[in-house]
Length: 194
Image 1 (cartoon, rainbow, N blue to C red):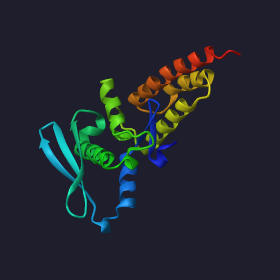
Image 2: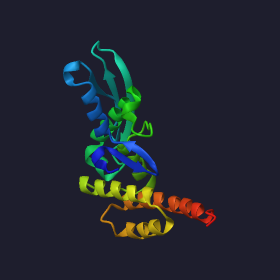
Image 3: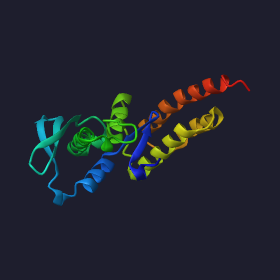
Image 4: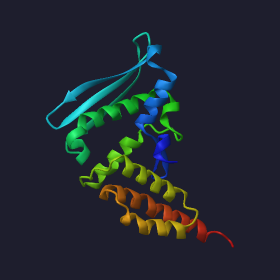
C-alpha cells in the first residue's frame, strides 16, 4: 500500500497515518454531529511540550484521550514545527483509543507519523527535511521491501537504497527493515525441499 491510502508499512507492520485517522473520524462523525477533537497543552518548557487530545461526544463527555511529548531538538522538522508534530501525535493516539477502526489494518496504537519520528530519534541523527514526495517514495520503497517475493529481488532492492534521494535517516530505516527481511527470506528458501 502507498501513503495515498493512509497506511504505511514500517518494519513489516501496517500503520495508519494521523491524516487517515482524522479523515475516518470526520466521515463517521461530521462536525454537525456534535463530536469533536480537542487539544490542550498540558506542560510546556523551553525545549519540550506535552499535549493531550480528547475525543468529545455531543454530550461534551470525553470518550478517548491521547498524550504526546516532543522536544524542540528531536529532529530537523521539530525545530520549526515541534508543537504541531506533538499535537498530531496526541490526536492520532486519541483516535486509536476511540475505536479499532482508526488503528489501521493491524490494530496499531502508534501512527505512521509517530513511528517515523521514533526511528529518526533512535538514529541519533538530525534528519533532513523530506517533504510529501519523498515520504511517498519512502512508503513505496518500504512496501517493495515488505512484498519482495525472494531474497534475490530483496538483495537488489537493498543495493538501491543508498541511491534513493531520501534523507539519511529514511535510508537507515529502509536498511533496518531490509536486512532482517532478507534473512527471513533466505531462511525460508533454504528450508524449501526442492
